[in-house]
Length: 189
Image (cartoon, rainbow, N blue to C red; front, side):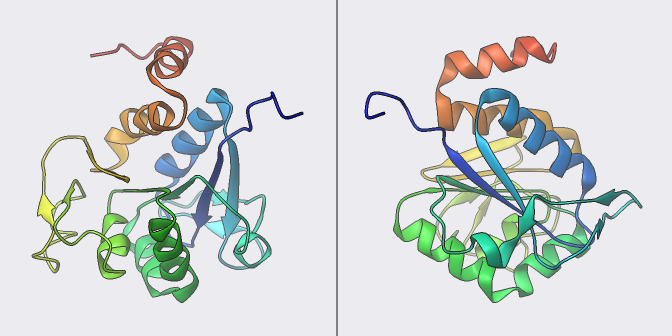
């Protein structure tokens, strides 16, 4: 129906070696908020995380690559981020979404994926310590979550809830962020 508001669509690529806490936290909070989150594996089959948990996506990246999304979320983990950064499909999707002025977000080591794709030059970003050192054009910040225009970045596993709540606010506004924070008993600062 034309008067109904469309649910924001979020793409979360899932790579072997991902930081499980970040993946699960982000997907859970965004789905609680009402986003249509698609957890898309880089390859077929279960995905082993950085700490031995086995995750299963909703689909594969190839099956949704040409679909439209409002937000791209790149979870971290050293190996997972490396795999995301080496996947030309991820770089191309991020560049296309940047061109379309969609939200591009990353946590932990994954801001390096956006930097490698040339998207964070001249931008402020947070990341796991040293993950952006190879990218001097990126202004590293120490806050738990940093927003610079269409880019939202965060530092690591301990900041996953704050990061996911920021993503919620970016998609739905401050009232939805507060509502979800209350649901999960997260004190608002």
